[in-house]
Image 1 (cartoon, rainbow, N blue to C red):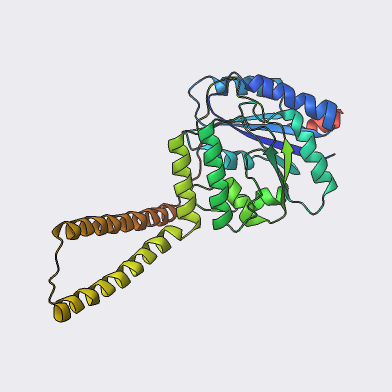
Image 2: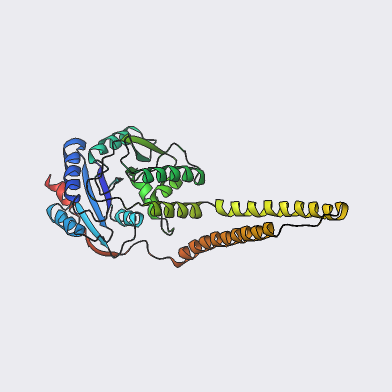
Length: 320
């Protein structure tokens, strides 16, 4: 039998964890008929999520409860969970029940049938996100397909099934603020989508606000592409060529037509415009330099504050 490790980053989800565990347990024991472990990583929640996680661990040792020292974000929380994985296959999913556990058998079935596939990413048949989230996702998919040279039809979501060696490869990365989806695309081209259902959110609201989506998109662009620098460079080249042409044109008018150069307002507007472009270029360079500085610091992706992870998987095998 294979062991499936389910890694779930948790943030303010005290109301959904019990149901998530129960449904996962039912799916693996009654449908999949495979062993599983549930690795819950509390990303410094403000509610009683970790208390619920401890209670689940005390009830079932297949549940591992890890608490981070501060809010590091979804992707570092996943990396933390990966470090506790014992399984042959790794599943990642959200804690808000929008990823139905009952859809996991679809992913497992395709993985068992396709030896040529390393990663299966769920593609939502009926996405229950707000308009901003949907537009942000589409823009992110387009941008990453251009930057990472991936199939533009491949959707990247946080509901995934991957082989163990893929996770091990991701764990070896030392990049600052890693993005799991991007790392998957850079690790293997044997990635496919499988269509699944996407449920509505039962409690709370998504942490992916418009500001957060824009921030993540800017980070993705400036860490995986030199496009902003190329755009500023091309604007500079075009501006230089235009200035040479205008200079020759005004000289011709002055010497051959006797017309002097006028237009004080135009000059002021041009100065303001080009000063703005210069400051924009400096800002873009600063963004890239900050990424270099962050990489040089070698700060840890996460810090574990507390962990309830004693593993009795082998003991359960002998008892069965």
